[in-house]
Amino acid sequence: MTQSASGPARFFEDVSEGERTKTGSFTFTTESIVAFAAQYDPQPMHLDAEAGKASFFKAQVASGWQTLGVTMRLMVDAHPFGTTPLIGLQIDEIRFAHPVYPGDTVTAELEITGKRASKSRPDRGFLTGKTITLNQDGKEVLSQLWTMLMPVRGS
Image 1 (tube, rainbow, N blue to C red):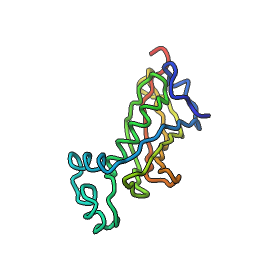
Image 2: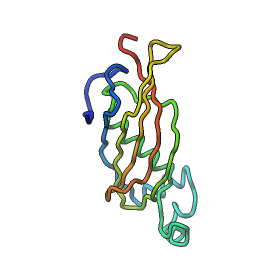
Image 3: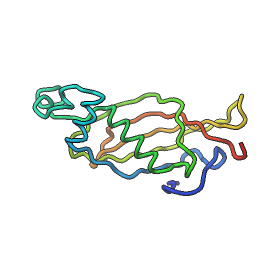
Image 4: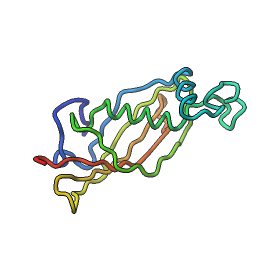
């Protein structure tokens, strides 16, 4: 089941294991990579094409932190829980599987892999999900495991 990008608020009871949310896309430009790196991750392979060529990557690449941020933006824009905010509690197993280059276009997909009611707070539940970010060739560039907080209906 793929969730639509809009709709009413969803609650813990409305979400099922196995449901998937696919996002729109984002294209990394040299300018966006440099601007992000200049502010948040000013390493040579992000800031300069020639330095990127001389690096381990053999080309200019986007910061992994930028890829994480773009993935979050894509997922927020996809509204997996309708108008209920995407409230993150924990991120585990962040894996940068493949570099992101200028011109790459990425999309993301969240699969709900588990859910459990809170033992101490009956007004909330917890969802776990795997988020995978893919480039235009379908190659995985990033994966992460999310734990999210969801309100229970009527809370």
